Length: 283
Picture: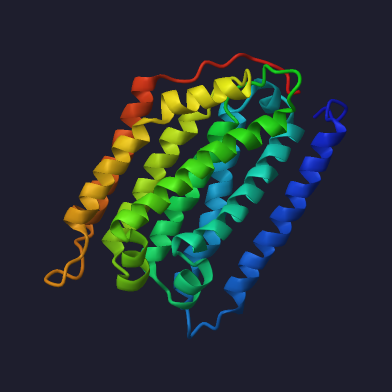
């Protein structure tokens, strides 16, 4: 692990990401511990402890096996981008509430299984968005590698939140999850977000040449999310709970449509092709 190649600005980014990660994730686990067992059973809270850890491991694997060659060959860069991703995930949590999903209210205090499923999917989607931003090399000597990752991750993450907002505006899917507590809907929402994360993560993956090139690639490889969005909207109008059937079937109205969303995203990514990566030392 060669520390001499790490620049001052990279140490600053590393330090800020580390502080945000420790501080905000500590507040997450403190909030879980502060809830009385009678309000939220211990067995229910278990997954809330584990889901972030699984997401972090998943992100580490992306960095270690699919990240830039210069990152993979120097563990200090793996750590830097890992903590940047951990901070990115936790900051994204703060955006969930603006889409109608409160981590503490819906998951912790109300023991809403449907919300827990949706949040799990959203977390994976965020990791995919950020992970895709780490795939490829920075070929622009005038732009810092960490800035390239942040810009790319911002594009994919904003795209995810915009599509989630539009999905909610069209179908009130988050309301069905939080108020009706329908598990099948939670699965559909989580799977839809994962599918979007897969496509948008691919859209920001690849070599960075300049901002214009990245924006062009984002449109070129990211447009299939619109098809997934339209299909998901149609599916929601068809499969969401009704007064005659207030609870959706987990398999036929949740798991199977969810698999369909994710499979469609994978097919689109395969059709688009894997990103071309040029080996380069981090800037």
